[in-house]
Length: 221
Image (cartoon, rainbow, N blue to C red; front, side, top):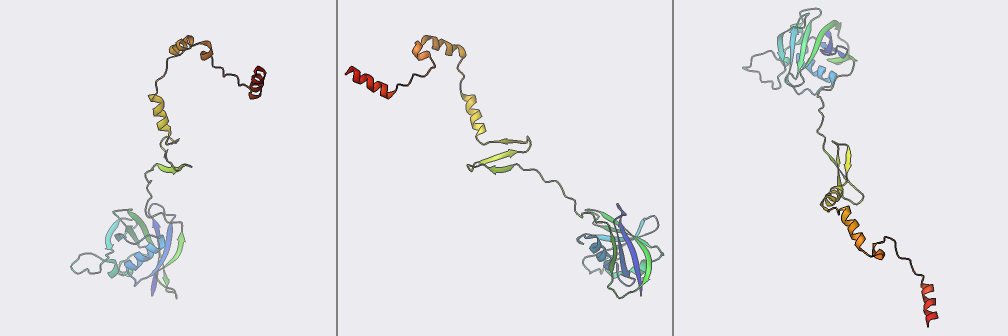
């Protein structure tokens, strides 16, 4: 029984490729499943093979259908179609399209050679080159301000937009400073001139030594 060896590569990067071997009597659904295993995708989206020529132009479509009840439906289904049915060229080509409404992954499939069947399980991956891209693109999550607790257990907010730390008491102190009335310098000077010299001075009174005071009281007695 003949075995087909295909090269499967990504349309956007032909350096990422897989060699897959499959029996001529196996189906396109078998081929689809081994391609999904080879590239590490999740196999849960619509998929089609398109028969193609040298210019990779799509023609006949062979579609994956999840539910096998095809009575009354028009189309060519993967689970019913054997690989040999569309092997018309020594270098037969197919376009493999996966998740057209989402990632729209397109892989190019080309027959490399026909080999004798060996004592291995088919279909199988014969060779892998390169790392497959991520199936789902990651999106940047919205940055949310982080709440932190200080030593006293008070929640403070880190404002990432200004790259500055705002202490929870800073706003209160700032508001209090704004509410306080500033005393004019001229008024301070005027009051100081009216006060007696003893009251107006800023010098602190000298401390009296308790022992000296006791001695003075004894002398007086």
